[in-house]
Image 1 (cartoon, rainbow, N blue to C red):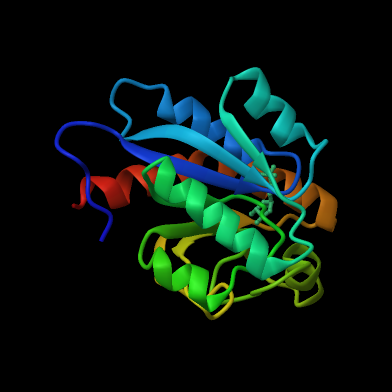
Image 2: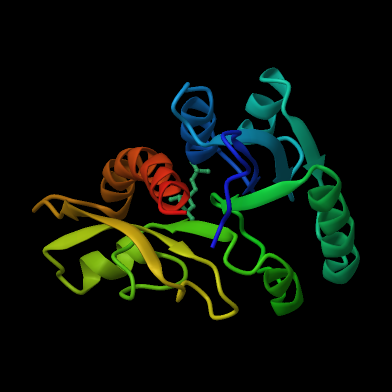
Length: 194
Ligand code: GRF
């Protein structure tokens, strides 16, 4: 699927909309000698969020686009992705839904992290729904992005036990810690398999 160019690391872009804890963990991974990515670009649809501030501090090229006109925005972003020779896109809390056309252009090269044990609880409010349904476990999944929301092939998943006194907020916090470890592992896995 994603091809490594010789021994070099491939150029990677991370798409965000907010806090950017997964962006930070991907960045940390990218700085390791053994990592297979070079984090070249951060795309955000929000300008003043923590993730953008972090990217700027680390001097990563940052593209802000509010997605007021999706077609136009995607066109501009695609141009930058091609120009920067990006070979892998990691969605990390990116709150815009990419068009089928965009996804086709990067087929098999877009991955996402989702805070549930997919195929359970696609979409939003995953923790609240898992608690309401009295699940014993929640968790997170890294998967390929296809045109169908949160439905592409799963790369890695990890369970998190639901505790008696859990609230959506408490659960979200514990799952996020696991997400931050799982995402780099999933990236490493897909790039090692090629
Ligand atoms: C994470 O929970 C991720 O699973 C979901 O959005 C959240 C983003 O968090 N898609 P962060 O911005 O990476 O901290």
